[in-house]
Length: 587
Image 1 (cartoon, rainbow, N blue to C red):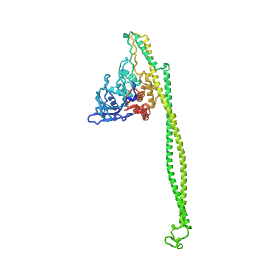
Image 2: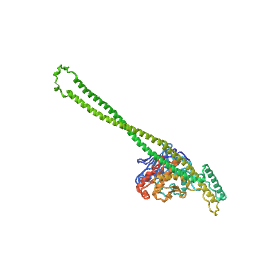
Image 3: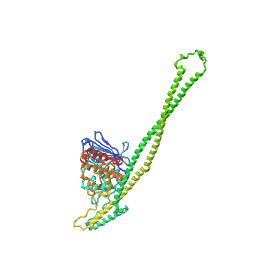
């Protein structure tokens, strides 16, 4: 029954109700976390009951004033494996369902009627359709201690998928309804989801009248012991070291997780340093570009200054040379040299004034040029410093990148690979532990049958009622991780009790807590189950619907921290895993 997680499961895209003369009401959801929040009596629980009813529940949603006149519910689903879109439509008065396959543009590709009630002989029921989407093949579950079985129904799975506000605070274990008739089935369904394995056909010992006493029963039990020992032998485990190996694996796994987290923390630190160095490098490179631009412009200005100084010097030199020339008649009017009146010439034509003005302007330009050269020198110094800084930063960045790529990331990958190997080995050892536990119980049963009995005393049933601790070990480890991630106040080791068929958290029975803690731990149980199935690639619908896992009055009375701690827990509940990975739906 083990299938790839990517090939099964679905999520809810839309829930809508309609009625004659009424506008269709709908709630759109996405593949991930969806939280429907609101004040009391606004229809949150009604929405949860609509989902359960569309999944084939026989109990109709209780009528509420806001839903008056609405008579049909439609659930739109999207399969994760095929990405196909399906719709389930049911009348709120009861009866069978319409199943539709929908194109991406909303057009109906196929439509058929499906019986809402599960039928082992009919592969076209609503139950068979939903079981197929969830990845379940034809599976059977034991229904009583006699070993009689029946086929799995989606209603069995829906009980562990849709949890209403009454069940979430119930004193019953999360997978048990409280109906004695259904207790065996409910325990078997949990075992099926957690292990992915059906319970083998029960070998029921014949009674004294048909088998002439207890000898036949003993022979059958010995046969079961031999078969189980043969299966154990295939695992190539040392029975005497199974428990110790489990402890070693758990310790090694804890150490690996610490190393993994420490290395991941170092990578984060290095990446932050990289970001800082990269920012500094960008600043240096940006400043170097600015300096280069300014230097080019200032060098051009310096050439202009040099040209101006040469021109002004030429003006002075030309004036001096003109004065040295012999006096001659005016080439224009022919006036004799002694006829000129230099004292009457305008100031800007006086040679000495022109010389003085040109010399003054040249000196001012020389001062400006000296200042410009000082600035160019400063820019050259800054440019050299920035260039050196850039080289150093480039070297540091390269070193950090090499440390991350060549040292830290290989360590992370190695830790992840070792964790995967430890998980595989742990699954094998857990299976061996379960087989050893089964053998011990069979031998105890054999010893019990071998004891002298009083007349009329009946033998015990050869089958067990409920899930077994050895089979639940991997699952309860997931519950423990969920509670730790949610910062559960009394977090500790979580175990599964054979006797109560419920969780024992930090040495305290789950049922001994008040409503608030029961609601939270029930939500953890259901969330850990879907997480376990997805992680182990076991069949599961891939979504859960939780009605009010936390309520203000419960959080206040149970934790004594009021809304503050409730907000913390709500935030932790739905951030434990990627919503895309969980496919979590919550109402």
